[in-house]
Image: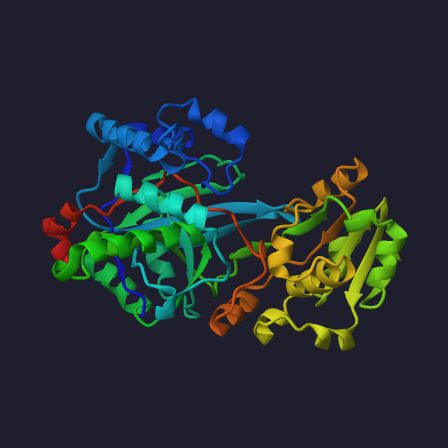
Length: 438
């Protein structure tokens, strides 16, 4: 199913590799305004290409890209390869254990959703897709890899990855999220062909980067229409840069995203809100709000509620679930977050269906649990709804059902970083003599 190809990557020149921490950056959809300003002050930081600014951001990024290529800031590898990418990280609940998410970056054919090869789990915003498509059109360069998941219970590719990572091209000391990122490359043709063979019968779930992937689809569609009868299907712009990891791996982590209620509709009191929850949930007061994640862990349809300085464990009454009548698949209806959005936001708070909820300004999505409690205590929010993480198995079930999840359902951690690898989709790359080897 999934066709992948090696890449002749554009990377920061070897002379700059020892300072790679100065040049990497967060992805465009997670970088904060404060981070942006700090990173823009470095004239060689990758953010100038991945999240350009100015009156015509894409045009300014193109000027900078050409300067960097002419000055040797970015150089292109002579041989095509598959780029091994490891991320080492720790989590607050288990600080003594170092996780390692293993994966690799390559080009994957930009399949339409209807092809059922690359599967999505969330919807996109047209404005963000257009921005990404415009940047790709001007640069003809993939500036950051999206994150995709394939499943291989045998972990067949792992020993190739482990071997390659022993000779890193460069590595960060610590990126913006506290992870250590390491990049290596595999250029052995026989090994690369084995990667291609294994992925050939796999579907890929898009974990992160839906807007960037749809930007590639939009650009490919425009180029294909312009090519007419000359279209072959092998043009570089048919492909998309993706970081692929094994969904069967133990160190693939999905962190929860909590819901912060900045207001209660109609200025409900705490007592009125609790009364509206009671027909749907068992509501149990708790002494310590910091125990809420532990109290709901592993329990379906259970949530923590922090409201006016008091904490509660709330859990949907099982017989009530049949009332959930949104037009979606059983796999989506079974999700904790669907239950939360339907019964808490929709029923108890009267906010209607998911489309209506998306336009309501009274909800914020917060990943840091202590921050949720702090903001309620400071009066910045009325309540916090604490959630469990979504399992990888649930993500797969939803994707294979053809449906999408509620917004902000998954936070695959850590995020990939920008600046480690760029890939060209220019027409002349297809005519490089090494391209015929694959």
